[in-house]
Length: 489
Image (cartoon, rainbow, N blue to C red; front, side, top):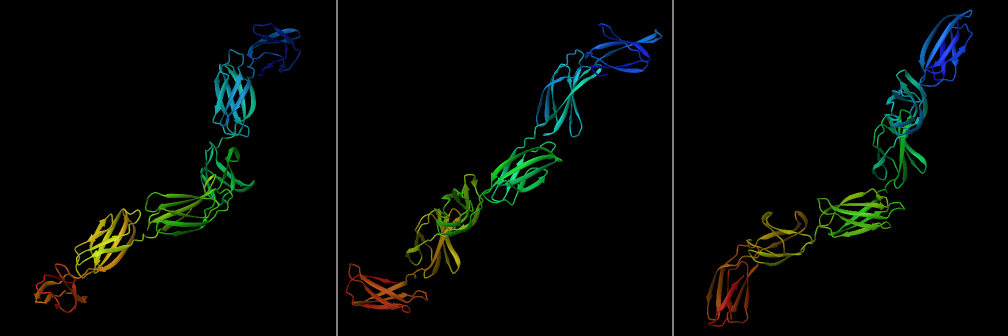
């Protein structure tokens, strides 16, 4: 049974009544001998009809039979279909029939696939069907349902929106870029295409995000597109345009000094270069120093470094889009130059001074004799007096400059302490002379002894030099009854 059509089963019938209950009788006289007949006439939807069929023979009625039937509801009138990526909202004008129980909305992919049916209450006029595939053609069918069955359908074709893919460039350098994207439900593969100057440079199919594109040219614009597919069905796509970074500067050379360094390099071939960034960072930790040089320069000198220190030197080009690839190397500044002098020395001590080093927080003084460390001390300023030494002994002294535990430079020197004073001096005075005797010093290096005699109340000294193998001498030409101070060295 269809709305507007009525199939009546007849058995050699002649009289046919169609009565819209309880309305006026419609009588149709059919002089037929068929067992069935199809009548098409104007009738109403959602209406109960009473049908009576009577059989006749030679004008005599043999009998009648009747049946009651209700026509199905009309098809709903769809007013709006709003497609989204993975759902469709359908809105319709409800069917004017109090017997409507619900509406069935069925959606099925036009190129094949399983249908999805949603049942909506009879008092509703819209629904959203979810779980669909993006960028896919669907046939949507809606019909009213009563207790007697389903009404006439209304169908239409709708296409869901293409999937929205969010692309981001995770990292990029001069020859590669790492691209990630939001995954699309139902996608079985992703096609990545990158172009330069309108030409396709490369294409690849992957199943997951992210993906690193390699083999690119530096300082070059690339248009990269990510397309989501379900098998061969395109679900959506999106693209991003990005420029690779400048290449790393080449032919970098460093000339270190004690507290400065000269860096030279070969410039990068890129008209967009604004500056070069040169970074100096101590390899054992500490604050870094950065110098910005104009893009047309190829050298710089940085000052204020620490002596004898390892630095990681990094240089890279800078454009308006960011920093290029770096070139790095490790360079060691020269050790600090320390100038040492012995202010004074005797047989048991020496006073040492030195030129101070910028940045030094302490100085370590070490003195050795015969290869063995005799003593060491840490001080913060110059000078320092080393005591407790042996006479007539050669010492190797070293002054080391430190910044905390970092050695900045050092300088060493060798020096011999002076002989000890001769002992047991005995003086035998005469009228105009005196004999001076002493115990010699056990030192093979003694060349001679100097005997000095000076009047204690003033006057010119008398100096006598005696061979190192001697231990006495007589001094003549003195004044009688005069006090003299006698010194033997």
